[in-house]
Length: 202
Length: 202
DNA sequence: CGTACTGTTGAGATCCGTCAAGCACCGTGG
DNA sequence: CCACGGTGCTTGACGGATCTCAACAGTACG
Image (cartoon, rainbow over all chains, first blue to last red; front, side, top):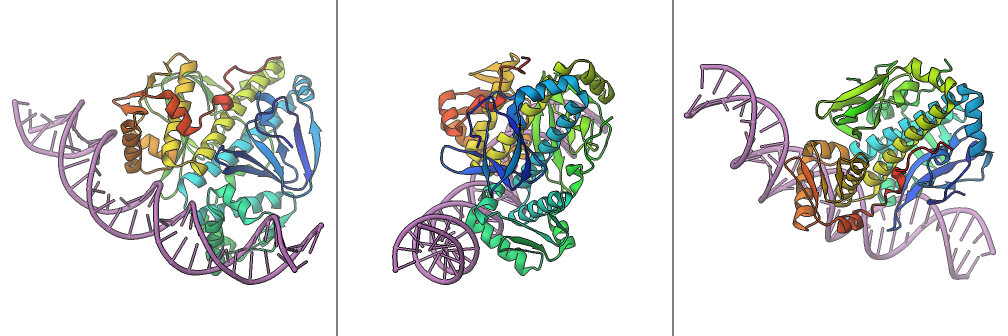
């Protein structure tokens, strides 16, 4: 896969499997920036910036279609609408990172976890991989810890608390929303930033 | 200025002054996502997403040139290179947000503060508004707190500690790098993500 | 039947937030 | 000239959220 510091990458469109993009620090800790699920773009940022500033790791086996940087830039010239669509995708990506930033900066661990699971559920529902009752989720508690800026130990405690409060159950590779409304309220989840209606083609 | 929930925005190019973009939560706390200094784009994301998902606030008096959404999309069709340049700007924006995310998620308060001041210094140096000795900075400690996900009280303590360790002085609207190398080491600052050589126009 | 990975739980330590108080500065209005 | 309120900065005391260290259980896998 792609690693930090490489340059001149291609981008990919993920057709199957889960990937996470993360940044590793010299002290060994890492911060997961985002997950990609089927239908998502992968590595869009490395197309235009000279050095890829983060790494990717497949969570499960994946299938992806490669898009070469050169081809992409040429396609911009031929079909400007494509440029608009790509920019939309980049904007949506950034909006998710921003929401993630707000979560880590200003929400406590419970709300952070709730918000993250709700966002993931929303995105998966969009591609038919889950609904308001739950979804299959191959992530470990270590993934959650590196995503939410918590320790794995605390992730475990938070999950237990959410489960005991009857809100959500994370177990055996499956997330079950026991009380979707309560979870939304705890996380103050508003999916507007996901802009799930697709690019505005004119 | 622009506020959360509005739609159909224009974008701006900032020619003078400082702006911060932030997201406010229902409990009143806010998270500052990024600052814009002269030469930066403003509100690029709201061009393509239907609703602006964050607000802007001028720190000091500003000058900016307006760019209408419609004009921008038309220009894409006429000059594909512009689309590439815009996408580069969007990518760089996102890379900064990502770095910010890593900071809040995986760095302690001291390193977070050091990293932020170094990034700001780097960006300002690019437009001739500072160097390795320091820069003028109109931000209050409350701005820093909302940026770094800390309380204003703790920001004060962190600044004092950095000052007493001879690393950096934040005082009277001016940041002085007393020990640039030491600060870089503390923050593990690597400016590669800023990609300061401009868009690759082939 | 070990070994590695993941999940689980407890105890103690630490970072950071909250509350509270006070100081310095500045513009306003009497 | 001075009282006053507002904003920003500073410091101390206390409590809580979260981390670290440590131990152990369950499962998959060679």
